[in-house]
Length: 144
Image 1 (cartoon, rainbow, N blue to C red):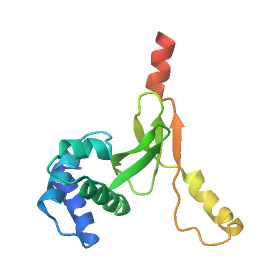
Image 2: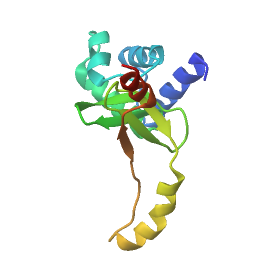
Image 3: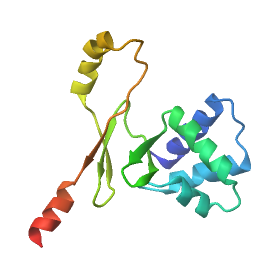
Image 4: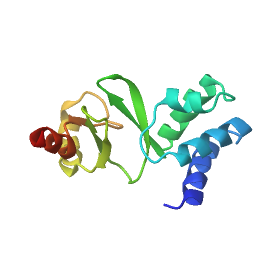
């Protein structure tokens, strides 16, 4: 995806939620756009001292809700964020190097229908994050 397209997607997600594109939100979009990997809300906040922490956290939530970025809960505490690259997907998180990858798990989607019959209520969403040791880290240990 071209940077202009990424920026447009992020701005559109904010506008879709009825938010004005303020100078602070524009700075936040540009900061997210400049990052190639994962990031935390703290890292964004530290990079943008002129933007209030509350604005950073609220805006990240809106972008997650809009599907343009993903929030991955980690076993280490603070969630990490990454740009969404594909439609509905899940994540792997390497507990060794913190690498995050998007994956599609068609079997999970297939389980929802029978699972829905057992749940008292209507399933409206789900999230699956797999905590792994990635191949690079496994290879590094085996070569050591």
